[in-house]
Length: 262
Length: 279
View 1: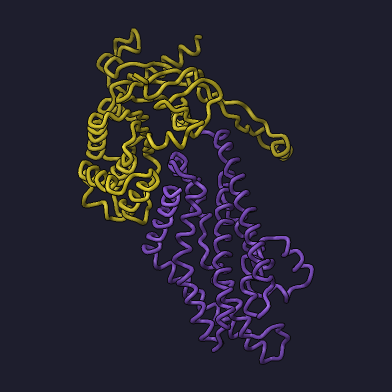
View 2: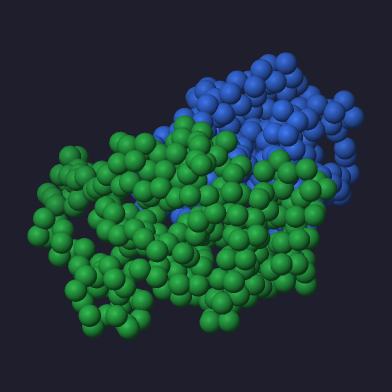
């Protein structure tokens, strides 16, 4: 058990070392994040000043966006690395090792996440405070942070699952972009779900997307989309679903390798 | 003594899709009812390799070499026949076997491109569950042997192909495998780098008694590294014997007695193809 943990922790450590060599990418994410928050801060302030119905306090709306973007921008696009490994043929090395390919990729993704979450989390707090002059209560932050991290972990696993589709597809980007669009609407990436029509809210409840973004971020409005216990249960349920999905996909892929050969 | 590798009438086939040709209706039928055909990649192949042997496993493109290597590594499951590698049944015991075998694919990489090789070596040390102190000693010994001390902390993207390949081989030897699969390990290298890699492989095999199975289209690899050649074509065994006896394989062709080895091998493939047509 300890050896297995050390094995996958080593994948995370190498990924962390990789981030050190790709500081430009992280700096780009920080800059992009700050610009997005700046733009939306101005937009919502202008909307409030024009007397448009907002459905929520503009300050809370900006903090909501800071949290959803913190989760989204921290999550590595690990599906692209997996796709490259499979298409380039380097997967042959990974399959011949005494380690699970799927867990190795997931551990790599979590390593990248371990660096990005604190850096982008700090960016979120500094920028959101800068633009609003307000900070949510400490009790809210104490709930948001663990659920935000859990959401990012689940989203990383979802990206690994998408990457595994490269065993069949030349390019998994279309699947990723469909997932992103669903995350945008059903996950409430830009606007909280309670501002959407009821039919969208009902549809969203059947998918994993709200628990990834909207539910953790909605705590800034006071009462969250889901109570913490219910959110934890939903997250656990979707973790199981994604884990089973990854396992099923990889098992099928191994059989596919036999069919494709070469 | 237990053989390092033993194949007994091993077969492996694949089902591949075949297009019906142009036209919209043909494409629609391809989508709804695809045509498939069976390709026999390995056909009742049998051979045995003793521990410490250095064997060239050669054949023309599509002969079934890569499929056989993947069967030996446990990545593919054979349709029929028995396979034993270091006493393990590869397709059933792949993870356990993985601790004892190493692989080098000349056209693939296991090194993290942005990082120095030392980081990949550290990762592999953990993956193969090597004791930290033992791992450090092994890295030091192999980097000295492969003259990589000055390069082991340089990001892989700054290394030349020859330097990278030496690092790839070190990465494959870190866990002291008893069997090493090498697929075109010198492809794309200049003559000096090729000579260095060949010498190092031979030295390491002799020193540690590592069994080598090498596939290559470069006859220099075969002559300088291996003592035995197994030739396959269409998934079947064509010839198996010492490298020195390869010239006599093309029976009755006196013109080839002093010919370069690649000409001999070409003739052997053609001879095998003719024999197959006749049979």
